[in-house]
Image 1 (cartoon, helix red, strand yellow):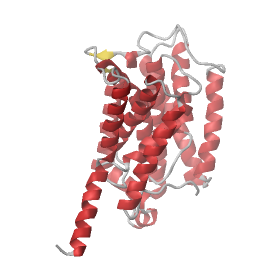
Image 2: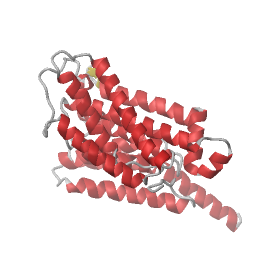
Image 3: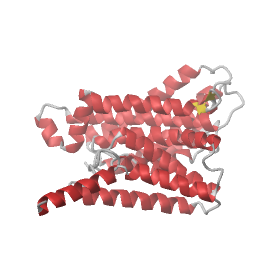
Length: 332
């Protein structure tokens, strides 16, 4: 075997191993916590972990669509909170117990936020970093207004408000089913349609995409809107599952969701954000958080472990793949 063939083969083996790093990390972390806390992998706790993963996962899917288009928003957590508050506040009225109408209002509010972000960043040219932080601040203020400065809860909510807590067959949480359905829809949209291919082209090389006849501004507008709608879904799922809307709900989900999106590019398709990787990474984030708590460690250990895994995973991509992770634009 020639030296070049040996190097190529060695690199190929490293790449194949790297493709399953995320899965291996999830299994290893889960087993470690199982050793520390023998009840960790009991069926009921596993279902709870998956349900909590659903909220982070839906938020991360919305963030993924935006990052695929080459953008990044620091307002996704705030959007999650405010739409959860809109959803809960509407249903808190004694005469407004129509769940479907509440969901539609939440989606409409999400679309409005997405269009406003797109208007400011894509049309006007406000730097994305500045715009999303500013919108996050405004939206947080709106959440406090809707929640009257405290956690939102109402005895007038209809009986179906907490349906995300329900379990199909007494085992599988409804929240997990909703998450999987949304993940499949996004996977089909991203991987199997021309829209998905155009979106990827815009994020990878906007100049080439524009020269190919793709409307770069138009695709970015769609990315902002879809991302915001998924933030809204995450907020409504969280409100239903928790049976309340906390003012810190979105802030606590922001970094795990961004980390899950980044980690997705280290699974199966190296250097490319993808749905299976996002789902797996969302589960990993929750496993770490829940494991740290159940094992009795200080909560800051969660941040250390999550940050270390993200650093290692991204480093692997940088070593194996010359062009590294897809870039995102923080300034116009």
